[in-house]
Length: 456
Image (cartoon, rainbow, N blue to C red; front, side):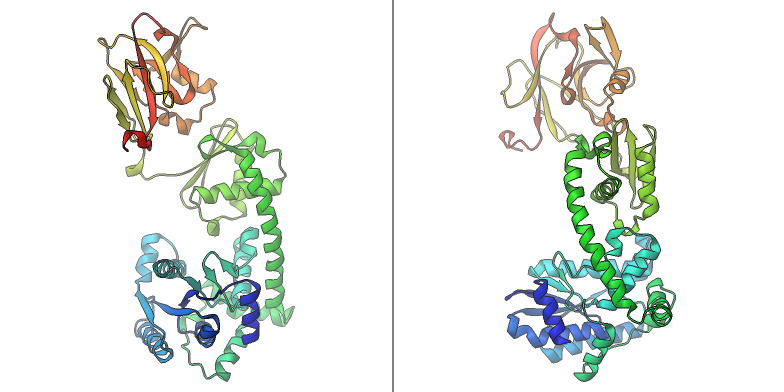
C-alpha cells in the first residue's frame, strides 16, 4: 500500500520537498494510517508535519477520548497537534444545515485557517471507498457532472494521498504496522445518508451485481471528471463571450451555444454569485433554462439566497440581501468646486466653473446656480428629461424601458438633477437638451472613488 500511496503522490504532484503539511487527524483508521505514512517519509520528502484535530462535541466523553488519543499519538511521533473544539449541533442550527454538513464545514474552516498561518498544504485521508460513497450520494441527490466526478485527489492546497486505496487495504496496513486508531461509534448509525450508503447500499450492490462495485463507481467518476474538465474549458470561453455589464449574461449570445455549454455557463454564474453547487440539482438547471426561454421580468429563487431574473435580453444573477442590507436611495447636494463622495457608487461627483481634467468624465451644462439646488441622486417618481427630438419631456421610467435598462439596476444609476428635471446621466451618456444654453456654463464631473489623484 505504501507503494500505491507513493505512486498517487508522484502522479499528481501532491508533495514537494520542503512542504509544510497539515494532517487532518480524526484518530480513525484512515487518518491514523495517513499520519503514520507521512511520518515515515518526512525525511525523504524533507517535509514538516502538523496534525489538526477537531472535537465536534457530539459524543460527549467519547469525543474527548478521541481528542486525547490524537494528542498522545502525535506526542509519540514528535509531531505537534493543534485542536479545535466546536459545538457542531449549535453551528448546524445557526447555519441551518445538517449536523453532518456543519461538521464538514467547521473542519475545513479550521484546516484552512491553520494552513494559512503556515503557508501549508492540507492532507486529508479520503480513500477510494469514500470516493465511491460520495459519487453515489451525489447521484442519488440529482447532482450534475461535477458531483458525479467524485472527490478530487487535489483541490487547491488540499491533497488526498490515500484516494486510490481501498478501506480494506488501509485497515490491513494498520494491523500489519500495529497502528492504533479509534472507532467512531456514529459510523455504525444509519441515521446519516452516507452511512446508509456505506453499510447498506454498497454491500448490496457488491453482493447482487458487482463485487468490484467500488472500483467501477470510482472509474466512472474519473471518466466523468475528465469530460467535465474539457467541457468546463469550453464553457469558460463561452461565458467570456456572453458576459454583459454588471455580471449579467447576454441571452441571445448564450443561445448560440449547445445545451451542454448553456447549462454549464448558468451553473458557473450561479456559483460566482455566491451559490453552492452542492445544493444545486438538475431541477434548478431546468428552472434556469425555463427562465431563459420565458418572459422578461420573471425571476426564480435558487439555493444559497441567489435570485435569477430575466430582464429583456439579459439574465441577471444576484445574491438576495437581508432587509438590513438593502441599498437605499441616495441624494447628495452639490456646491461649487467641492468633491462629494457617493458611497453607494464608489465615485466622486462635483460641479465646477473650470473645465475639468480630461481624464475625468464630465459634461458641459448651462445652469443658473443661483436658482434651484443641483443634486446627484438616484431616480425619483416623476423624474423626466427633455429632448429636442421629441420637442418635450420624456419620463425617466419610459426612457429606461426604451433602453431596456434592467429593473434591478435602475436604482443604482446616479444622475445630476434639479427638482424632477434630469440634467445628465453619466453612466448612460445622456443629457437634457434643455440645459445647453441660457445660463452660466458649468461642468458636472464624475471621478472614480479609488482615484489616487484625489488622495483616496
